[in-house]
Image (tube, rainbow over all chains, first blue to last red; front, side, top):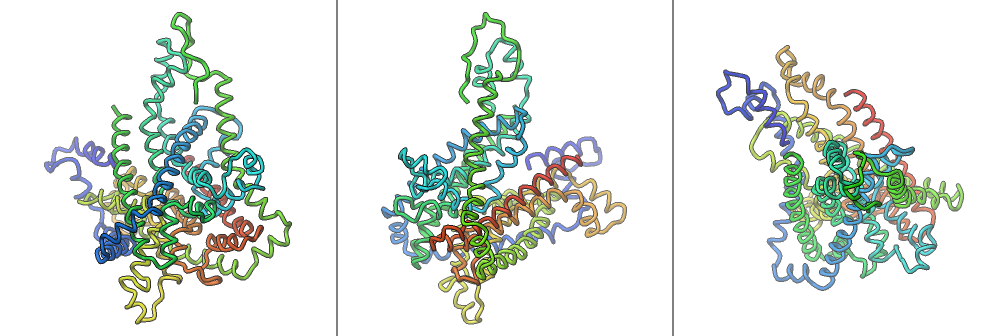
Length: 297
Length: 286
């Protein structure tokens, strides 16, 4: 998206008869048909699927009493749910930043048998329905599960605990860091590393002083995407949390209230969740802008 | 990624290499492979192991159960309605956004990305507020005996809400990269708009389009949160496959939820295979 105005500008650079402002002129005055049709359909579709439902939420909340909405959004149960949602998502995103970076590094820099299989496996959490992920993870970490039978005697309970919530959120968010970092790592200029090595820096110093700072903004973007995904996750948590008060995250609380026909309570949580996502989306856009500036000095 | 060796003193000549020592390399690879096996491969194997824990008979009974059968049909039906609509939307949106300049494009793109940032359960709630019994159109729909929530239309709408960006998001960057020269040439040579679109644009983005379709389909068939909120859990009627897994799990059946889950796991594996194939194909052509 950032590229198109530039390329359009280059195309126009050598044309003497173009007196209009060079950047967007060529394409907008181009002979391609169908803008009205395609844009019309796009806006119509978005209107039905997104705008109308969002408008319904806004209209509905306007009719509710604000003190009541505020109370329902900030009562103890809701605050505990936000706390777990934010805390567990943060923990999961941090784990993903570390292991996602490791996976991306190994996949890009090394050649070893099974590399392609590992690369394909990274997408597995994207492809697997979250209900199945929650189901199998809960079973793995339960008392008699393949992992639980070793971990539970050690006091590590991964099913029906806040730790289980972190495990499931890590699973669903793992591909984001890897897939964000991989292309950047592939395009990373090896000359700089060679220069550092020639100048006498050891590999560790090259890594910490040259490679890590270059990759940091990208890892931060992947971290943010993984965090955003975790905040909204519901399917896998429903299985691994076991519907206990101490494992209740905000989306689960919203559905619980909805199931009890407590629409106002559900709307209150939904509004807070949307506020979280918008703050995150805004921050993420800013980080991405910063990251792209960082990579093209 | 802790460095194994501290920075060496500058007096010692370091070979200007840009690779890690064999030991560091080996450690990093085993750590990555170990993590992936434990965290990605083991959950997959576990689905099948639990499903077949009691042998073929219980597995077969769970998979061929009447309610499971209707869940399979509903899942395919929902995907068969929502994916083509999203493909039409994706093609239209990417054509408008990639080939033209207009005001508010960034705004439009933000809206297209919205489902990626909003929780699916919030998406489901939006449709309940719109079409539910107490919703904006609730009375009108009731008066005309139209059922949307707790019925197929609601499930389809919720599925579309969470899946509509997939095709568009895949196509927009590809079309932007390709520019409009080919289409302009076709039009200059006398083709009309539709001919240009079908014979020039669509073939040139076909791998990206197929990629978007399989991702969209995988999410459409596997969506849980948004669909659960609007479905109403009527067994044999509004249960999709993921909801069926949930219901069997809540009945404390040790085998059946895993048996039904294998169907979804196979879908995921098929999606990954097609994805790898498409990536290999598109790399082959460029």
